[in-house]
Structures are given as C-alpha cells and as structure tokens.
Length: 327
Image (cartoon, rainbow, N blue to C red):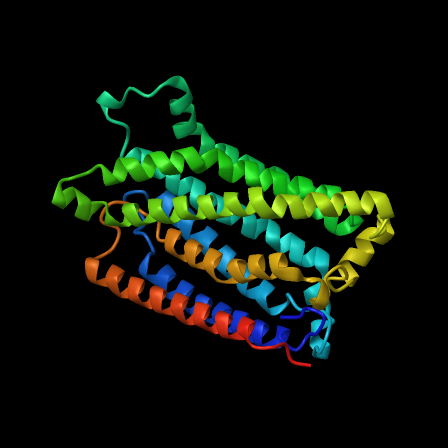
C-alpha cells in the first residue's frame, strides 16, 4: 500500500471512529454494572478503576475522531478541537489513567494473592513485587513533561525521551507480570480457580501487553525515534520552536507534523492499537479485577462480545490494508 496517496485514510478513519463509538457504549454499560456499593469491600479501588477506565475510553474516542488533519478532509477538522496541544493535554489524563489501571490492578493482586511462606522472595524480588507498579506510574508521569514540550518546541529529542520513559515503565513491571501469572496459575483447587477467574484473565492481559509493547519499543519504535532525533540534529528540520509564539502555534495549529503520506506503518499501527486494543484493555481493567468479580454468565457474554468485536476489527483492517490505495 502506498502512503503517498490518501484515499486509504478515510476507510481506516471510519473503522476507528466506529470502534470508538462502540467502545463508549460498552464502557457505559460496564460502568453501570460495575458501580461499587457505598460501603462495600474495596470501594475506593473500584471507584478509581472506573474513573480511569472512563477517562481513557473517552479520550481514545476523541482522538480517533481528530487523528486526521490533512488530505481530503471536512472543514470541521480545522478547528481548535484538533489542536495539537489540546490533544496532548487530554492525552496526559488518558496515559496516566492507562498506566494507573495496570499498576493498581497489579498492586491489588498482591493483596488478594500474596506470596506464600515457602516462596521466600529475595530482596530484589520483593522490590519488584511491591515497587515496580510505582515505577510505572512515575515513568509515565515524568514522560508527560517532555511529551508536552515536544509538541510545543517540535524537538524530536524530547519525544524520544518520552518514549524511552514509557519503555522503562513497562519493562519495570514485566517481571512482576510474569510472577503474577505464575502465581495465579499455580492454583489447583477448582473452587479457588473459579474465585480467581477474573484475576487470571487480568494477569494474562497485562503480561501480553507488556511483552508486545516492550518488543515493539525495543525492536522498532526506539530505533525509529532516535533516527528522527539524529535527522533533526543533522538537518535542522523540523525547525525547533521556542517562546510564547510556539505555545500559541501549538494551540492553533492542527497537527502540523502529521500528514497522511508521512504517517508510515509505525504511526498507523500504534494509533490503530490505541483506539481499539488499549481501550479494550482499559474497559476490562475498569471492572477492578478481584475475586468473584462478576457472575459467570456475565463474564462469558462479555468475553464473547469482546472476541467477536476484535475479530471483526482485525478482518476489516486486513481487508483495508490489502486493497490498493484509492487515487
């Protein structure tokens, strides 16, 4: 598929926006079904997970709508709603929410299924078990500063620092994700397995995300980012901006650094995952994984719907990417 043409972008955008709409509906249903009682067990944990899940889903739908900026566009795209800096400000809340969902679920897992006496963890393993989720939150929090500055200044080095911090965050929790999967799957009692079925699913989801994201970052994205840094330092393009005018331009400009023909597979792959898979992860985790989370019948139905949706999206994306670009 040639990225020099732009006809392919609108079918892709239509699919992403459709997914965003479905995600909002599913999120609303899950929110209502997962509301905790006022004085119930783990009420604070459950409320925060709901809040963070809603934030990420809403921002994901918003960004799906306004990811486009150039090409065969409608006039309403050229509005302040598609401001690069405004989108970045919304992304701050979304990214902290996404990392918070994962970190909180892992920390809560330790209270539901702590290490047994015979495990005798070393000091390093104990640190990984208890502190690595906080490293994730700290890394994503720190990443917001260079990320926001990069939008304003167009300095590629800041963007590379942001992505490096993201990679550090998820690499830090990867050992814990493995430990928690092994711990929950070491349970053999059928009744206990049934009680922990939602936790089993959540550990698989978190581990799968960490493995995929870390591989993507280590073997593809980091190289791409640092190549861009070297290119800017050698050529001086894009031009680095400073001062109040740079802030004003970041608010008024509509994604000036992204043109359809310049997106490339990395940008397209990440945003496809952002608007679909990442939101599905957040919707699942917003239920606050815990023992006896929901009735079996509800979980089964939700899983069938989710898998069906994933299958339809993947088939649609494969079809779109397989046909020649429209001219």
